[in-house]
Length: 213
Image 1 (spheres, rainbow, N blue to C red):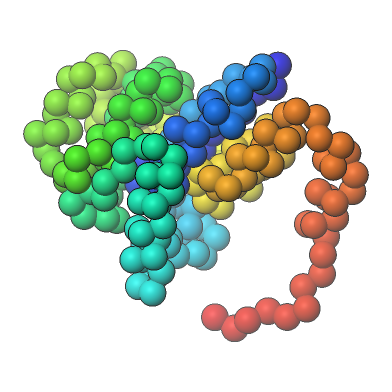
Image 2: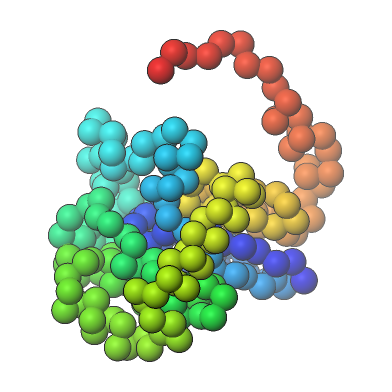
């Protein structure tokens, strides 16, 4: 049985789409999954990137795209009252729901639906209080333990080469994005392409130029 580490941040609509689609994409396969909440902003900062919603010309397109994808997928997705927002309260709550900081699928789905259904403020204090009461975390959400667990999750993602969410790691191979689910499925099904040299060769391709920043 293969084990998948699914890196996610509840601020990402693509992570919600991929989270929902994962069981269908891997139907018929024997696998296990660990869901690992990470701070997307820290990943982006580390790699010197902006998020899609931080690029004015890309922002509206991103929101149109994810809503179209959701209706194609049959998944409820309504933009929250404001976006982007600080995902820390939700990430810390997710991490706090499991002793090692790895919430189960029910917890993750509850947190995703909190953001992506209803068009409400994801950080509304009353809504967060109700969410905390419903999920009954095993750690105090505001504790240093939870902050350390979230940091450890994010640090482990960076060590694995994660640069965005959703990302999936299995056997040391990293797959990124909603549109990588078919590729992940092919790997788990034993597609012979992965036995060739193209996977490793892609990382060795020389750069012909570097843009000035």
